[in-house]
Image 1 (cartoon, helix red, strand yellow):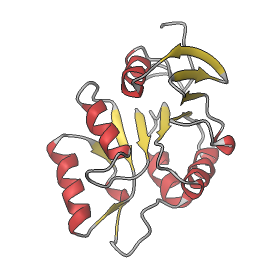
Image 2: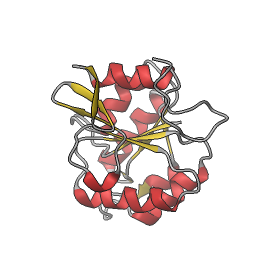
Image 3: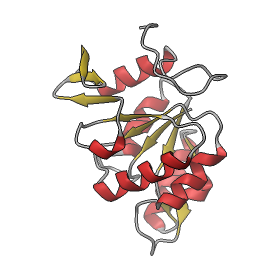
Length: 175
């Protein structure tokens, strides 16, 4: 499974907009974002259900809560799934969100591969990032890309993060 981590606010350029686009091309993506139970949050949940986008119900919180999942909440959600291969950090994530994710991932028995939309998350140990129209793998340019969605789909469909039965591993030889 491939998680898209970020925020889920309607009509914004964020994790929700990315996953809506990716889901049309591959069913193995899941949203990892705090969802509120207020009117705006219920609209987002309705979109997720109608478009058959996977999300964990434990990510739904009170409208009074912060819009970011805590490290404990992230760990609780990620620990349930035995097939998390990679997590994509959407560009709207701030340092607190990244720290929460890093803390949660560090506690997992099988650590997923971290993929980022920008290369500023030094503490996230990103294996793949997209920067200035290029895809960089562990700091080396892999290919030029102007469309992150196409690259993510290519990586997912070619099982570059490992097959369903194996633990997460970066395998680019199949490209």
